[in-house]
Amino acid sequence: MPRLWILIFALLLIWSGWGPKDWPTWFLEVVPALVALPLLWFSRRRFPLTPLCLWLILLHCGILMIGGHYTYAEVPLFDTIAEWMGQTRNNYDKVGHLAQGFVPAVIARELIIRLDLVNGRRWTAFFVVCICLAISALYELIEWAVALLSGQAAEAFLGTQGYVWDTQSDMAMALLGALLALVTLSRYHDRQLQRFHVPSLSISPSPQPPIER
Image (cartoon, rainbow, N blue to C red; front, side):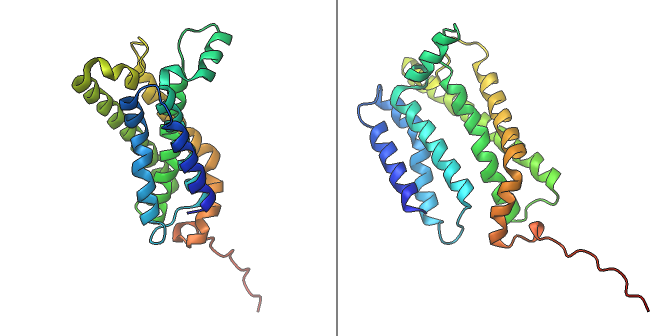
């Protein structure tokens, strides 16, 4: 893992944990990043990820830490954006759910291709989208469980802000994020994956013209 990556992660974590709005909410929001760090560290030699994958994970961690510090419903910049657009809802949580599809799509794609789990690009894309939607659905179930267990304390974690279709729109944003990642990053991702000599990405030699006798 690049030292710069670790430094940025540490600085973001320290800033996020410095006087957050609500400590239980901060922990619930940041815990995926805290789980990701040791997983990346202990797998860095056995299964190193592409730079694209690593930096996208850091971006996602940053989104989580910002949401944990302010709570997703009260990120100042998005309060300002809501005022500019004449809205009453802070939509930072939609950025988080867009990333929840965008970043896992690249991770899932890397694992599927490098482990040769699926044959064909179309099937790979299909299963990547399915995995991202499954992750989004699991996260919504976790939010539901937290709400049932913690009662009023879950409001800041859920961040629904009174929107009746919040769960469905969250999953739609994750789907959009996964599709955007596949459309915009697949070719660039393939170039980085070639360093691992993935058979499915190897370029077959062009056919030679027949030798005239």
